[in-house]
Length: 136
Image (cartoon, rainbow, N blue to C red; front, side):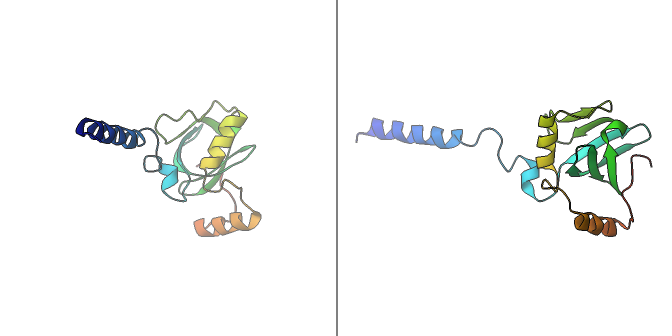
């Protein structure tokens, strides 16, 4: 192999290896960094909340801020995931479409859903006897 061919081969391999590091990676994607769900910023009629997305349900989301809260979609004026360029937004009391619900479910702490036993353990950890709602 002559010197020019060897140099071009090394250059091509370097470009190929470097090209694999562009775009989204696990290092850049915060939900891939640990078992926590994504953070959500939620506005209701009475309060602004920021907390971890625990579970996505057909009727609302379970959010953990200073309390464990069940926020029905009808009580949410706006909610946005704390992910850069996230298209996963809930707005004006409407139920998000199935694609948005499914993606948010996968980003939540419990994508498989919560059993009554797990809910009770979470309530105990938060010092609550029942889920709080959207009001303060």
